[in-house]
Length: 219
Image 1 (cartoon, rainbow, N blue to C red):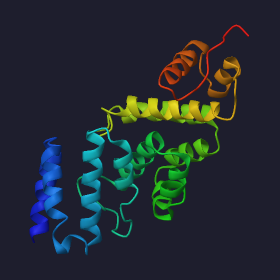
Image 2: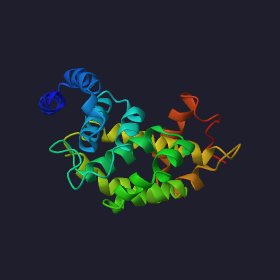
Image 3: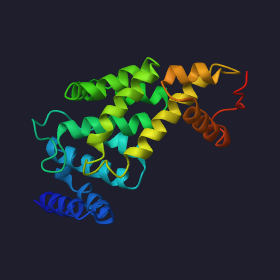
């Protein structure tokens, strides 16, 4: 099949870290009639597209591809490219880093298929649950435990610091959003962060216009 030739070329391009080629063959494969009828092919194409967006640091686009990979393809949805556990991890982390609360509800917590996939990775499921419940110190603790594994992950290792920073910044912004002023010492306790690190992050968010405030550490 022509689609099999494209899939082989996509896998080889992923193995060579050539995501320009991945996108080129993805475009060709997605135009083939038999590419949309086979759930395994759909899964492989979406996985490859997710990896290409991840490589380009387009985390929201990557998340949308990963969370939309069909489950009804057995234990090997994406052949040698990714495991189901990989899809759960990449989809959840990219979504947390890039999506609004409403989008997370729509694409992650309200996505029955992806929630079933998250059962394969309890730590990631707990991360999402605690983020949704605004238990941010628990989220940071889970992320800290996950980080050593992700730092040696083939596809995630180049992105883990940036993705975790984006998740932390989003949590800080959400914590701050209902208030006109926040006690940074109390905020540090809520996030289980030292005061200096918290103030540095908050200052970055203020400069980026995410938080409209000033830091007052004296009162």
